[in-house]
Length: 295
Image 1 (spheres, rainbow, N blue to C red):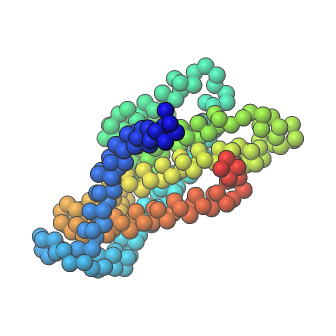
Image 2: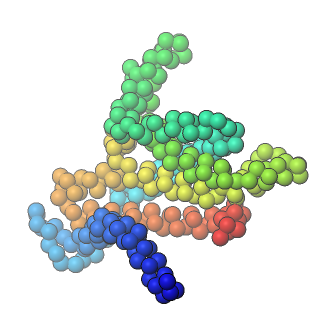
Image 3: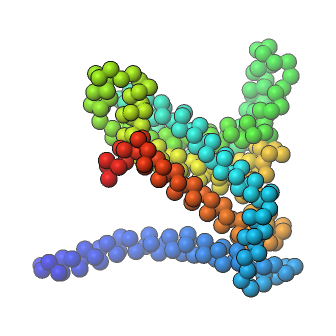
């Protein structure tokens, strides 16, 4: 078989493997975003969409302190919970990757079990735990630690952070575990032989070598938290008003699809800008030298 024919077969094979995936992404991801983007330039006249291009929707969103506050609130929740997950996930992932020899698969499966249930089941289970007459308050009162229920445990920012952290922690643990699992133990041994303490070893050896896993997990948790709709609504109480709930209301009761589309695109743009800046800064930082070296 000639080289040209071999190249042709390879191209056809590559097209057959990637074509369906590209088509799926184009139809179910790119096309809906394009429709959403086009609607953001239209207007609403009572219950009818007026297809006359305008930037009024973006101006309305950017000039509104309420909308800007909701976008900033969503970003801060995403950053904060991703940071909390990274702090919790690092020792857990390191323990599974470097200390567990036999039961790694069962531990990882146990970590993923909560994801096998629906969001509503997990949320209402936490309401049973954190409620005024729930498991935690009842236990604390039975032990005599408190005399009356702690109301702030539920329908508050605290409960929102707890449940979101619980829901998305596995998305941080798995990429970190994969990165730590691939890390050569000889680097740790060399650092310890040279007199590095545990903290210095982590920041100078472990973090740079596992930076790709950290960034992957951080971004996954960040995106999932920012886009979460159910948890703040059912757990957050009066603090549960989010940018996603505002977008939902615009597409629902308000029937203001153009403004809802504009708000959604403002949120997407803010998320993309933050992700780009974070990846770039981490890549240029001393902790990103492992990624630069891998490249």
